Length: 351
Image 1: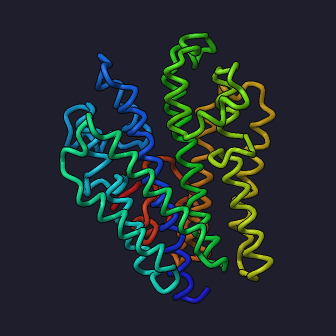
Image 2 (image 1 turned 90 degrees about the horizontal axis):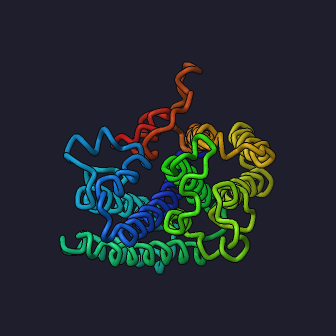
């Protein structure tokens, strides 16, 4: 790809990814705020979000405890946190600015409306008593942004990079959510009953994944860990499942190669094939729930490797000279800044 097309492809990728990230984070904060009202162990209730994004080191540099006030500020309005809602909305807008000649006026207006509406919120909007309402607004604006993009973006090669960004972020968020929330089940690591029948726990998990109503349609009597995990990972009709996301990426890569005759797609396609094979093998594993952490860790590594490969192949990112330097490590969410500097450092979330 030419330098200009590479830049547009990269901006499309990160525009989609940051928009999806804002929606996912808002949904998690909203659900947590709703279910934590009146809870006695506030810090424990909110600390799981810090673990979800592997932000403990960065978070505790400036916060003495993971209580509701500190977690909400860090993930909603902290501009120093590249993974916060405000940082994600801002990054999506900056990428859209670069793409202004390629996107519709309706989409550009939505991007600016979303950014300005959140930026101009008073500090009281981020208080625990109002954060659920604020996050509901963020979700609606992000979904509107995704919807306008879906309705107006021209279906050329750039469209597929936008889709790659959305789907990689969605799959990454799902694997992280499953990993952290399942680790909180008492006795889960030892195959014991624990509190697996707790309605509140499963409601939080499924609502955080925006999948509660879909789950109740097909499995309302089987709210056990194996059924829930398999639904969120393997259900091919659930647009937030990991399998669905990988299938969409595979479809896009096939079209890039066949319709748009994109060259050098073989390595990126191999990364998608590896993801698909990993999922296929896991679906046949009767003891998946006991190996869920290692499975999610593998999925996150493979998503990082795929994202890195897209950067090396299409975005003119410099491929590390040492094969060892290309190894992906799970950690904080990937950011565009680290992608531009060096491929592997994406996983470190530096800004």
